[in-house]
Length: 125
Image (tube, rainbow, N blue to C red; front, side, top):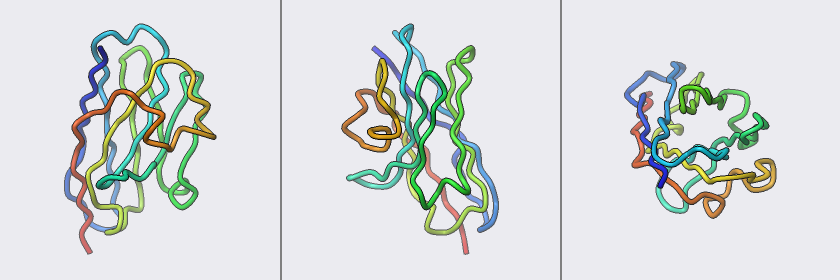
């Protein structure tokens, strides 16, 4: 019903930046709560954004990562700066229709119904 495709991953030196994109297609006429996760299962919640723009972040990442969305383009973004080797891994976009109360549930895997296939981020040094 809803398809998510991540892009923008790659290799970068420590201290560098990357912007990940998540393109939404399919039956997505209703508002979506969207999140970014990383790593193997159980995936680590990175950031999430409600349809009204309210955001939440993992406390240890919020100084470096920023989530945003462009509703007109049906794209969500994760801007990552000051990257560290420990930030390396597969990053996944997730979505669920409706309201998700992101500051309570946005960083939990179980909140989301739809998932992308992931994009690899590798930070050297």
